[in-house]
Length: 248
Length: 316
Image (cartoon, rainbow over all chains, first blue to last red; front, side):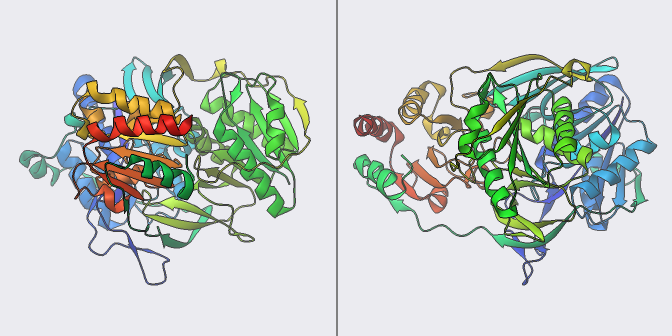
């Protein structure tokens, strides 16, 4: 089974988010970057699939040279080879087109993405990629078991789950649940050593327009300080929620 | 060049998020000096409901849900109606349809939108980024704009209109698609987290799954959905579908009540766009108190039964 895992290189969850003085660009000074949490589940799933069915796991990122540590980390976790499309992403469409181009040159059985990245949160790349390739797209996927040229899948829906069957190849928007959180693979020393010699191919980007332009950012406004209510006076809380906040 | 809005149904009825989407579309249409057309798939003669929120024309058809099939139906209607904007609510199904539709219609898409456009020429909309830590203003470069709004972020506003209803035959059969639904397993009769105005959530502070009765009672009294923190779903005290936070479900409720949840940054990332947050925690240093609007320091096992009693009295 030939698997492609698309990885986003994102600020660590605990990062303080800052922008340049004109608020036009994200300021990455002092920010620690990690593999996007939703993608981590997909990467471990891919390694499990390879252990079971054989084949290969390729990881891909669309980014400049600064994202290579993220790809090396994925190689250390167990991916076989990595591709970096040398490009600074403009928008989701732009990124999806770059990935689609790579997929067209290689026949992957399954392409696993995270359902969204925790930086720009658009959640568009996986579905756009599937549509560009004219193959099925299963989002919020929490179960994937191949069976011949088909696959059985589970996706999360409001308050429940849906079981589906699909042909392969397909694109998955993965998330927590695709594998158990305590099964998530982390790099070990041997993995880190072998990752150095695993292939990391750098591809030129194709020329694609972007459909949207980022104009500026705002930070979320700081909320007023918390109003404390005495534990013996729950009626006061009800009164505040009713008369002040007007939410009950 | 109308505004087209896709409205989602469940069991023959509109989801609440659909009314919000129509009301957003109608306000957008006013800004653009045009009319609102609503597309309905799968409602049992409930189309009229949409007039109240500003639909001028309603196109109604039937098909079984499949993200590819629904994207194709919306694409067909887009070709017929030639709208300048398409509005969709960012529900679970909305998110599965949106990117497919964006490619099919060659639209400029803005997801995670939280406001009406701040300018219509150029067309700029504010969206949420960095898991609730910031907003980004995005400009659409193309003629056709596709906007998906975060449920419960804009609100429902009535704007009664009388609409012409146009019924269409099913022109698109979900059976023909490469993906087939085999089974849907959904808790019946519960308030859905994504749609909920009030969410009552609890964490490890509750000490065990047997103590959730008082949380469920509180949710019942308030007509709220129940949720939980990540550690609680990880150890299996509550189902994964209740986990709110960065790797779980992101919510945007009017009122979020966090009981025995310390307020890790990953948890806050999924809930902090709620309008009002209440934290109840025994630890005065719990980070949630920094994010909350109202806080009670104390033992949940004392406070919640008292709160439930007082709320019952208040409600009657």
